[in-house]
Image (tube, rainbow, N blue to C red):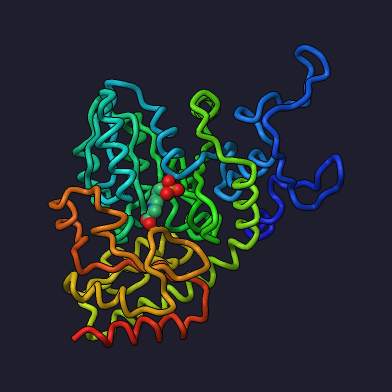
Length: 380
Ligand code: P1T
């Protein structure tokens, strides 16, 4: 079955009780049991919920995985995934990730005797050099938020597996429509469903998908024991979102390329970060492991003053955190999404005060470009 068909049907048989074509929102905390030990597979809604289960099956199918577990946010999904690692073990992480991921690893999980090394995972020799005898996980984001660094998923998987470590990929920026990390040897995929999977900026959520049975069992145990589950309503919203994922991603990709091409030629733009651009140092790798380049573009206008002019001049684009919705959002990584990253790391990665990130929505492409054009023209 093709991707769009899977997106619309996987996990979503018509409701057995009523024939409802859309999976109902099972807004319940518990389920009646016939007698002790006899029930319909649902006991308590932290443990199982039919709406959440439908979403978990749907997203697992889209990533080509056997198992899926939905959480209350992308961060909760990432936190649950890290529960596969024990005290005394070591994790290698892409040195450019979403700021919240860096904050969780460096400020919270490191207190539990888990060691983290933040390395440039786009350089496979650096990953190899960072491997230790106790390395149990390599966590990569590709392309990274916000400077769009690409990691070779097959190469990283080969190196990690030789050392007996799992590879986790945060696939939020691409969605399974544009990139399927498990096809390149990755073991576990995480998403903030808040972004492209939901697609409408109306719910926060996260998902973990994987094939390994033992790890899946542990994640189900963590999901139930910790309880950071996705609500039935939010599960339903994401299910509604994935039905149009293929169509939306095609348009995000089309407009993303057009916006990047426009910005690249603009005299007020000093640098752009977009793997679809021929000038991106990893364009060929991105082309190989992605089906497209998507709607995330970052560009540098040289100073905080210039960035501020852009933010104050845009009319269609909305200044806001987050990404992946139908509407175009524009943000300032240095003070918003990546404020918790160390200043020297930000400087090294290119997250300058003049860096602007845009999540290109699915409005008419010409309108998005015209808005950016009039805003950039205001820079002296
Ligand atoms: O916000 P939450 O659903 O908890 O997801 C966290 C997260 C995880 N991974 C990536 C790659 C992300 O981009 C995010 C959240 N990012 C933003 C809010 C942002 O504006 O970049």
